[in-house]
View 1 (tube, one colour):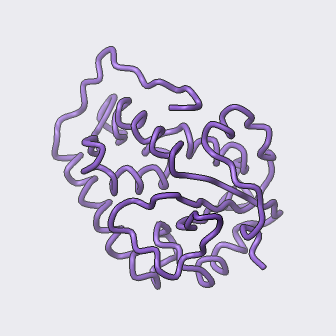
View 2 (cartoon, one colour):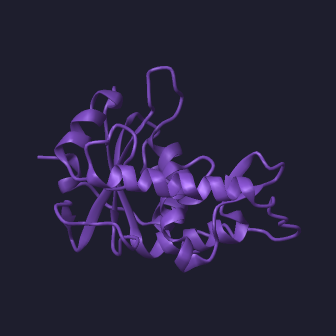
Length: 198
């Protein structure tokens, strides 16, 4: 039975209020959603407690990395699209709803949804996203098996057999193209609110 069948699910506010609930260890994590982004097909996805499994990740990616479950999950919940492929995917799919497209920021080398866009995404995650995990000493050995065994429409890397992969990849590439062609966002004094209940 997959680990995510009964593992404890945590919301954004729970993780940010008590990050030590997540061990600083290697492992695999799974993301469930209350309301998937529009156009994401959920037929055949694992269901649990009215939530839908759409994405699985590992941390670290290899034996040399110093990443761990606590760092990675926390970053997905409070980081930005530059460092979180999950946030990049979700924000791109939700751009028509949020009205915050991907933009070049700062020096123009990084791409995020700007402070206000990432803050909007924080709120969406709080309402819709829940994460669970399991420890494993070499999680990179599990990634292929999990992708092959489950319908995970938000995963791209190593998931080319999934019908959503090509479409999702094209959507993200188009968002990046438009960001490169557009002006660098001038955020001025705008700041992102980082509360756990965004």
